[in-house]
Length: 123
Image (tube, rainbow, N blue to C red; front, side, top):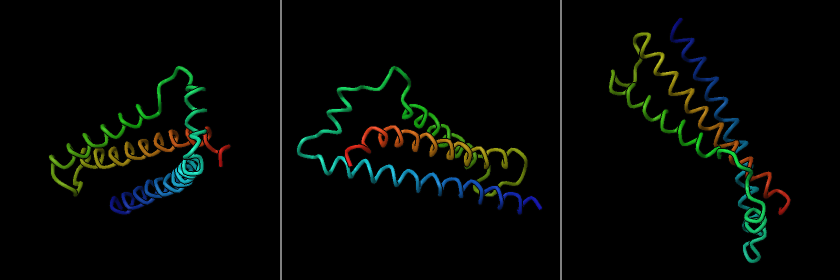
């Protein structure tokens, strides 16, 4: 029963990661296309520099924090007993690394959305 719940939990998390990666890929393609089409006049970058982001913390900071925490939790999980969770602490660390990885992907897509909203008018 526990193995089935782990399997279902992993499938849900990997499903979210797949959807986030598709959205992020679309945003990245539009950004790269806008930069490629305007490589001679550099209009997207000029408009970005003339209209800087409001005073707030960049999503890249949150992304970096969650990537770091994912690495730390994964290292602790590996140092405790490897890849196979056998008790409650192992399951907690196992799913915590997945959840932190999901949050990292979410903040990466939010950062891509920020750039996408600035560059989509140039495509």
